[in-house]
Image (cartoon, rainbow, N blue to C red; front, top):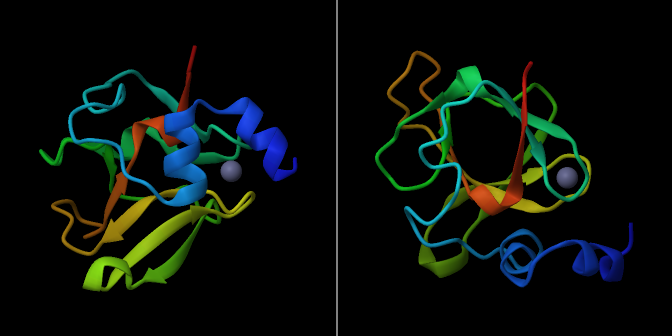
Length: 125
Ligand SMILES: [Zn+2]
């Protein structure tokens, strides 16, 4: 898929977050309080990124997970805005997804902070 096709496929807000590294407003995303079982996929390329059993309520206003499906995301050092953070991108299409922090409350110690607009939940039957 080229950039123009991606742009056609996404809403303007999705495009801003996924391709221009934007961030959706906290508590605005449709998956913040989602509790259905399934697999969260990349909305651009359908790459399976997170399983619902890794999702937890971080209280931040963004959907949060304590682990990614192995190989599904790539970590990139992000020094924008004067902060040193670790950005996560889809390993398949390179789209921006969110950030990962090492202050997670579960045994993995990781907190993957996602934008809902980047995700598409495929419910398990
Ligand atoms: Zn992708």
